[in-house]
Amino acid sequence: MQDDTKEKLLNHAERLFAEKGIAATSIRDLTQATGVNIASVNYHFGSKRGLVDQVLERRIIPLNQARTERLQLVLKTAAVAGERPLTEDLLRALIEPTFEFAATLPESRYFLEMVSRAMSGPDAQVRDIFLQHFKPLFQLVYAAMHKALPELPHAVLLMRLHFSVGALHSSMQMIGEQEPLLGAQMETGNSSAIVEMLLPFLSSGMQAPYTV
Image (cartoon, rainbow, N blue to C red; front, side, top):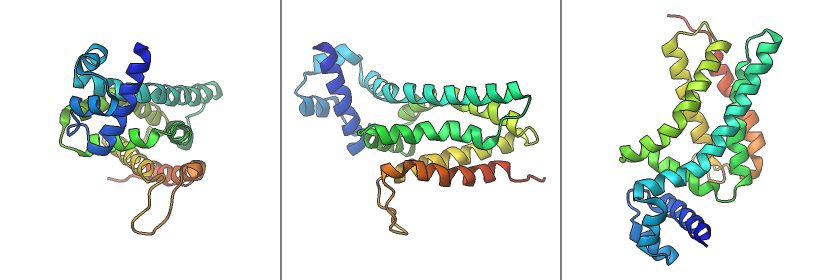
């Protein structure tokens, strides 16, 4: 029963955070939506910060684990062959699990909208929670990309990775949304097609010649 209550709170909090924003959503909003009392919220999460952390963790941890496993497999395969890892293989290991998450989880739109609000909103504490979970993965991606593209200076490689993550984030936001400029509909079911369009675009940018 306690597990059911906790899951109910997490599901409703995720939806409210997506619809209203994390900062604008109060614990009272959550209790009114769920019919659960404030004492129960405090029991399960301790505070609003604890609630936000667990809402993020339950999606980010398995997603990042899938990304990490695929990145490590690419690195291991390249090492056994005595070759550099391929840039596109590394990007695929990062990108594909993200789109698979969006395609297989019906509630993913709430999580994606919540993260979008958190990253673009004024609440630095909320951004810190998200970045705390993303930083280890980003460090792994950087180290792997350095093996693939050792000729790139640190600052250039880092900036290009930030561009790539930004493009990935933008693409995730467009899934199932009406694109305002071209009127194109990007449905979740087309996630594999989106991956195949995004990969060469990002690979070309990552591998573009760099001259001082």
